[in-house]
Amino acid sequence: MKKLMSFCAIALFFIAASASAQSAKEIVGQWRLVSGTDASGKALDVKAMHKSENVFNKFKEDGTYMHVAGAKVETGTWSLSPDNKKLTVSINGKTTEWTFVSFGDDKATITGNPGTMNYVKY
Image (cartoon, rainbow, N blue to C red; front, side):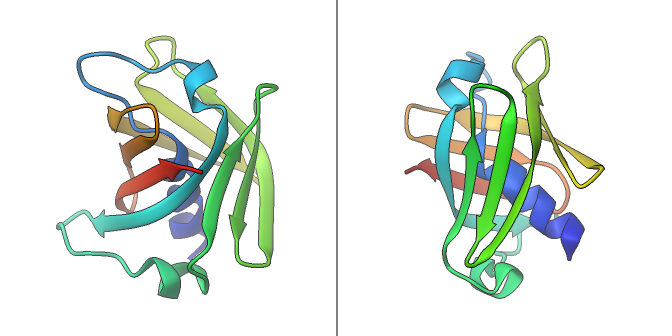
């Protein structure tokens, strides 16, 4: 469950466009998880996974990160790979890496474990 929560948190913020990479500046802000699929393409129930419909990831300029799922808050750090195609999030000593599928001004899609997550900037 923690692995899934970390994955969702990371995915929430960063989905990179295959043609153009996003920058850290574009990722900074608050992102809401709106949907996701597992590795087989089956829809994930965000509300059931997080016990809340309100799941956000907040990325700060100083590299700190906050994952909020209802009343539960987890903090950690985040960074981008040198080519801006991978997002790494560390929470409570656990590190998860996400790959951007697409990224726009207000939408992002990332993939990793447990699947693909879709976010909107909030």
